[in-house]
Length: 139
Image (cartoon, rainbow, N blue to C red; front, side):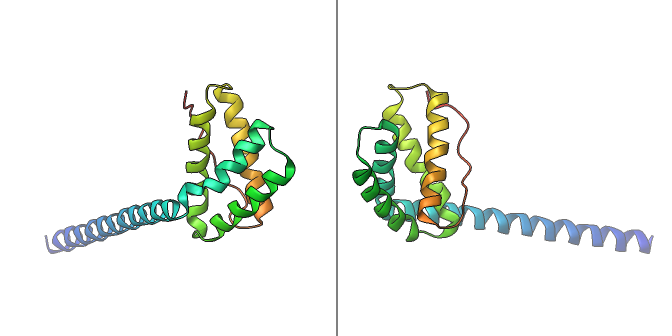
């Protein structure tokens, strides 16, 4: 009977510690998300990255114009924490996709978005080198 009591007490302690760890990770994750959202707002929703995307997607601008936007975009991304950059680029691409959804299909937009975000991270030469992009359609 004493062994059973010790076993149950140990099990209860393990469950308590596991729950505390899960709560800590959840709070940390929410704080990180909030921090990233604040950084995105502070960097004006990465408007320069959005303008670069618009030029790249539309093909209407010259390389000089897009080049100016990429430099400004890199500066905005550089001011953000590494772990927030992909979230910021996702936010910027979603904003751009919403504006351009009438001009092209959702599959085509996702493909272009993936190429442009990869190009931005490559040209900015910063971490992370690759960002996962949303796979669901906005349309």
